[in-house]
Amino acid sequence: MSTILKASAASFVLLSLGHTISGREWTSDKVFKNIKGSRSWACGTVGWYQGSAFFFISGILHYQWSRDPATLQDPLNKAIAAIINVLLWISSSWYVKNGVTPSAVACGLSAALQGAAVLKEIL
Image 1 (cartoon, rainbow, N blue to C red):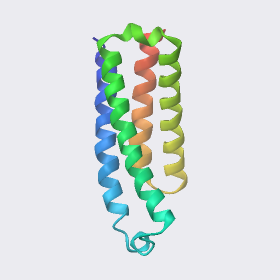
Image 2 (cartoon, rainbow, N blue to C red):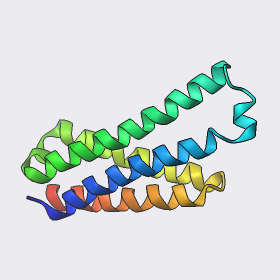
Image 3 (cartoon, rainbow, N blue to C red):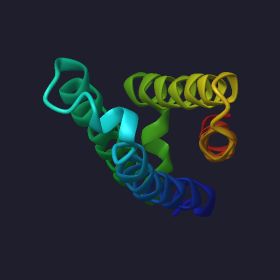
């Protein structure tokens, strides 16, 4: 069992929880509530919580990889790991650009941990 992949899995579960809590905060903002019932409101809300589910699923996947790190030698698993890492870095950059520092830091740290964990197992 890979401890660093297990730590990465835990970071994704924490990201999922934090993401969900953050969604509850910004969706209660007066500006956002003013568009309730609109397409933007519907897409923004469901998309946000889909993101929370993505983080949770990623945590489960990383936990599975931690149980058998050799599965990361499979090209499809490598591709999945790479896509997840790129998504985290892009998200972190977007949050930095838009002044959402706590989310930028959380995504960046998770990306660094995930990247290190995967590279340790595939190299």
